[in-house]
Length: 267
Image 1 (cartoon, rainbow, N blue to C red):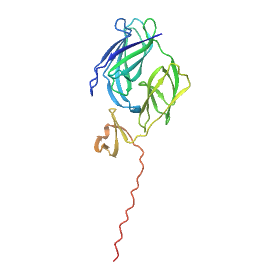
Image 2 (spheres, helix red, strand yellow):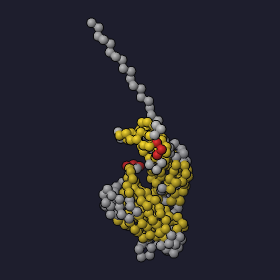
Image 3 (tube, rainbow, N blue to C red):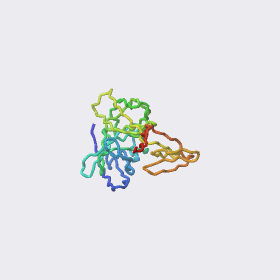
Image 4 (cartoon, rainbow, N blue to C red):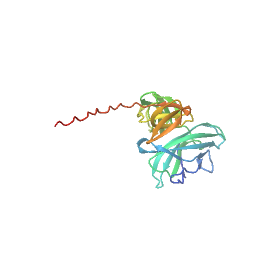
């Protein structure tokens, strides 16, 4: 099998989301897939100081053949052509002229300026599925919701089949801070491996609004009409009817020292 690589420039604007990027796979003269990467939006700092980006990718099968499964490695490079990150984009059961929208997330150690696509493919240019490796995913504590490359796969502990390449594992559990970590699966990886991830406790209360917004802060008071939350030193009041759920972190009670008044000096 051959490995073809396609490189595309991103043309980043500092501090602004990037324009859409259209690429043809394996090339423009005889394409099998058309990929339109939406705006790359910076999310937050992730595991090991890496920066998280997200993008919606529109993938269209422009060939006359059904693609049951395809896996492409997306590698990100900075302006000096140094690779700063990579992730895997998986496509499942895409018929001729069919399209699908895929939520794509990746982490980098720098600002991406260009990208490349690589995939194993057969003589007709259609990407084929890569070897999968079963991997046991464990969280501390157990029972965390697990996502692999943005897809919900259940709760931990869980055994998942991963294609060769880099994958992003995301963990979430009520009362704990969400976390994520990349995991690399090599072509010579042996079955029976496992990954353990420890979730950190939340340092702030969480107020979840009915519109899906989550607010981190210190809940000061809850009344019949409002919820008051202190956020970075400022107090904010929210209509109680708009609050869906409140998660309070456990706090250590601090006992103030007893102040003993000084006795009057005797003369």
